[in-house]
Image (tube, rainbow, N blue to C red; front, side, top):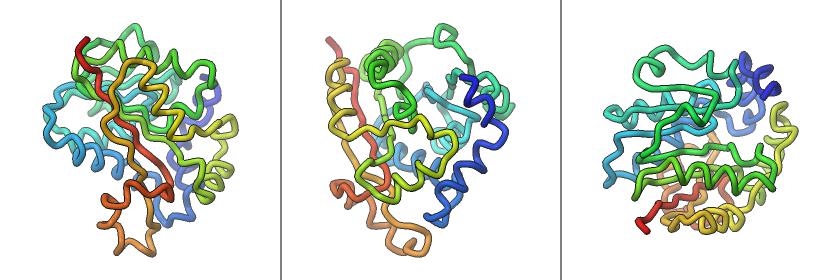
Length: 225
């Protein structure tokens, strides 16, 4: 995707600028997602992870820290983004621009803020593709912006590479997983408090039902037929 090739060099700075109202840099949100996954998948043995839409590897680095025994692969159609993935990640996994170059049988696949860049008519195809890459009993986690949060909508409007973004409601994301054959495990709202209310962040796991979160996470499992 030529658009994301153009943004690869300044990707993290652009994200940090768009979310400046939170008081946190882009790195905070990647760490948040990795910690969330470590918490909700605490009972799952994770040996192989695919970061689908990995960009420059921001989330993959955090997943590596939380799942140190897992192999982490990445896919992104932006060749310039893949070129900027850390060498340390490349040495332990495969980072490619073609899905055909990936293995199958992943224990966990993560789509972090990817689907809002995919045209609605193509989203089911992407989720079906991901389904085929998972091992039986493998997990898919989708993180997306919450379209009902006004600050989230403002942040999206400030981000240059979100100009094409069409945000998804949780209901759409859940229905698309069901249509692809997933059994839903979690539907959580996440990211509630900015830095100046950081003392309240320990409460966030018990607020996962509240649609005020800046983002949400939907988890599904590929059940045996």
